[in-house]
Image 1 (cartoon, rainbow, N blue to C red):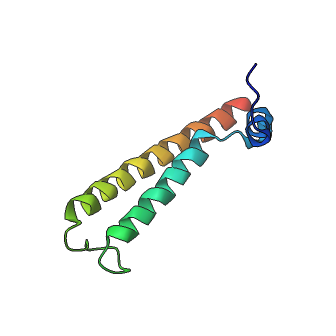
Image 2: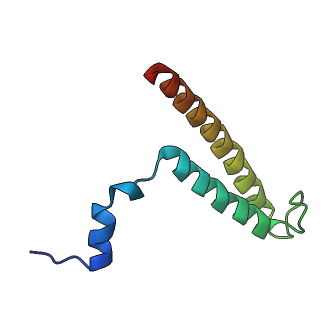
Length: 85
């Protein structure tokens, strides 16, 4: 039998630590936003650092996609909540 470390057993057994799709998408959005900040030339987040133009563009495209996914997920949850009443 494999003996799992205490922290792993804790994670596997905790139902209240379940993450929703919306929470997960928001975490991804936070990571993408951080990446954009790292690739930006200043705090305005409007221009890339020299040499990071491609990464800046890709991360901004990812941000648009994940924001759309969050919007869709919120609409699904809203619809589900209405149907549950």
